[in-house]
Image 1: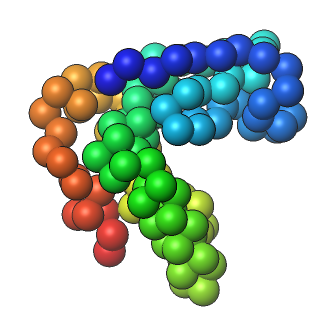
Image 2: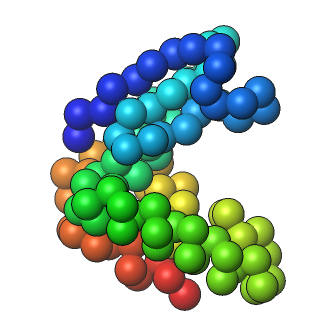
Amino acid sequence: YIMKIIRNSIIPFKGFAAINLFGILFVRRGVLFTKDMENHERIHTARMKEMMYIFFYLWYVFEWIARLFMKGNAYRNISFEREAHINEMYLKYLKVRKPYSWIKFLQ
């Protein structure tokens, strides 16, 4: 998946390495950005596209809020994050990933 990467000193805020906004990846200047991290964000971009972007963000916020009331880290337990974290080191994941694979990470 093609993803534009912009290195800068403004987005994301200090303390964060990168943020993916509508398939455009903003990477904090000076951060060591690995292939695993890039693959993690490419997995998000693939999901954004299959969910027509807006539904990705709506679901992401909905699930994050719901998980605030559950045990564990709300961010880490979001199905989208679980899929990306588990598969970020598998650099060929997007070649074998089936559409809506994140559903099996809902738990």
